[in-house]
Image (cartoon, rainbow, N blue to C red; front, top):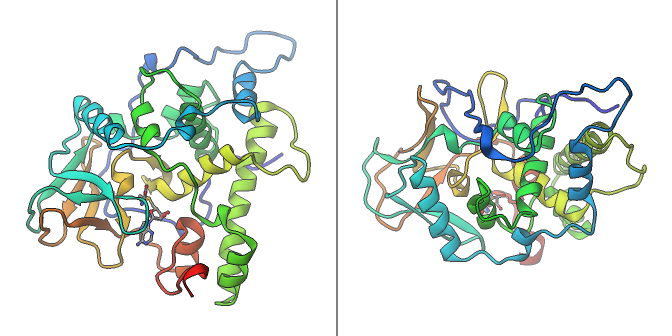
Length: 322
Ligand SMILES: C[S@@+](CC[C@H](N)C(=O)[O-])C[C@H]1O[C@@H](n2cnc3c(N)ncnc32)[C@H](O)[C@@H]1O
């Protein structure tokens, strides 16, 4: 049986700053899904209701419309409108193409030090409680497993009314961290020191534990020894690894739609704060010009872990550029 501990057992990963005031309780909309886990009442053992749903999501025949649809500006416009309708304050920021081949946040106006750039209400944070409730899975499902299956469920959805679907539609279609690194990339980074090799191993081991938990506990069947996670599951795990903020006393992990498009800088112009209403606030650390990229510090001091967890290094160029 695999461990049910939260997915960050060490305290190396913090993504975001000064969230100590944040009220981390989650708002769970009871109408979030038609699939609500019912109390087990039967005397004889039956597979739980969620087992077939999880099995379907992992089967290779399942379609993933969100993963098959290119991201367009319209989808970002829809995401921003939807988030605003729920209480987000986003007038000062936009999601734009970045210099790394993905998307990042940029300022739409000038800000001075201390200004609030944007606010995300807690209804828009996705943590373990929301994910478990949505899927009808036990509330003690570890956050990496719960959030990965949550994203996979959204990715398979065509239901336009599904909450958070606007968010899922804007996510990158490919994972870019250590889970997707080729053997050649492994060799390239191995040459920079054992810590790079170990960091990649750790991030893959995290993904393996997550996959094992999903099969053994949620589905109730051991995966074959050499059974690799399916590509969509790897995508989902990698999204959670690269896009969650860890905060709160129990160090739970949270997806923070829109704010998770902020790229990293060791010398950032912004930071994330929590407030006592459970909102997340993006605040200027420096004067910021209109159209300037908004960056935060992911707070991963070790370059090998940055490379493994987020897929980029500040110290060593990628293999294909050297
Ligand atoms: C939280 S997401 C940020 C949004 C992301 N750029 C996107 O397109 O969705 C983290 C990912 O952004 C990219 N990224 C963030 N900061 C970067 C940096 N300084 N250099 C290179 N890539 C970066 C990496 O792919 C990383 O895994």
